[in-house]
Length: 157
Image 1 (cartoon, rainbow, N blue to C red):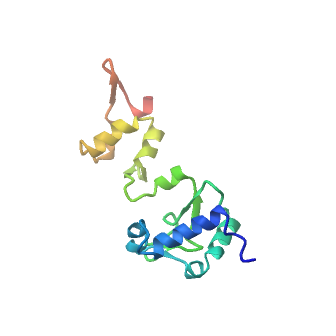
Image 2: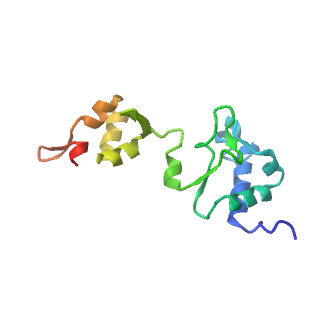
Image 3: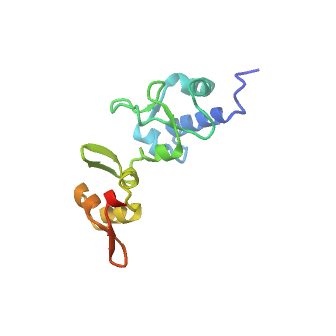
């Protein structure tokens, strides 16, 4: 008997992470290993240790292994002190192409602002992306037309 994890989802997740960070033939290598993302060397040498660590530290089927929330600029990757287990929705907030907006001294994704301010995301996204509205006050505080000459403001919706 080996480690006993070969047929577990955690082991397959660990193998996938290691492959995309270390194998130049992996289709996603360019986004991970090709950009300098590393994996803790002990885990590269023995993926079962990575899988066991994940299970012992709160990983569950359906969550995603995130390396960005806790990573430091000088050490980007999958290490015991840089990993978080989060939902897919939360993980999408940390993608490179997520629009981050600073408003009232707080920075968070555009989608989160729209939810908090009760604004229609598609309208605000279009203002930002296609109309070039980058000033958060203009972006969020300009009334949104909802038809029949009615408007809504974030604080009244």
